[in-house]
Image 1 (cartoon, helix red, strand yellow):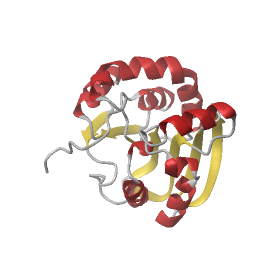
Image 2 (cartoon, rainbow, N blue to C red):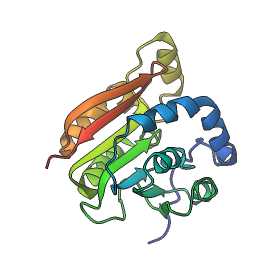
Image 3 (cartoon, rainbow, N blue to C red):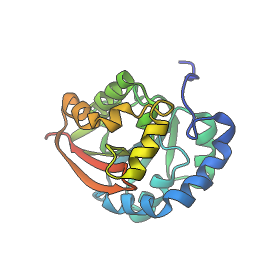
Length: 207
């Protein structure tokens, strides 16, 4: 299958991809660490990070859970090259689309995704959540960190300015919870909110 080419790069413009990792570490370094601390894994869990980008969440999780099996997936080959330099060789990296995950059903006990899903169209977001549900094992957990309905003036201003360029309408309207429920997830809860416009959601696949 040919590699997908009609995607939005991590920093929205391809020319900015080499600078994305450094910028995100500067802006989100502490938040990434907090998100990683809230992700609960069991020894030996198989974990997938969808839209892994440069792999910062994977790097933190692999350090916290050395007995886990970690896989990062991204559609962008250029950002995957950056991830390969950022991650240890024990982390598996694969190129593929979030809405057509190249893995068998029930392959992972936990799946994460951070600051990627807002790049997708509403239809792709719904497909991604169905795909995440499919490749999660029964009882598995999905941790989704992304934009959310803004809660302060800063969040409202930022999302108003960038809502079209970054496909933020679904996030602003709180539709991620709806999409997760439609995909079959239960017990959807908020674990963390920051900057007045980002939220970490945890959703469970029933046993």
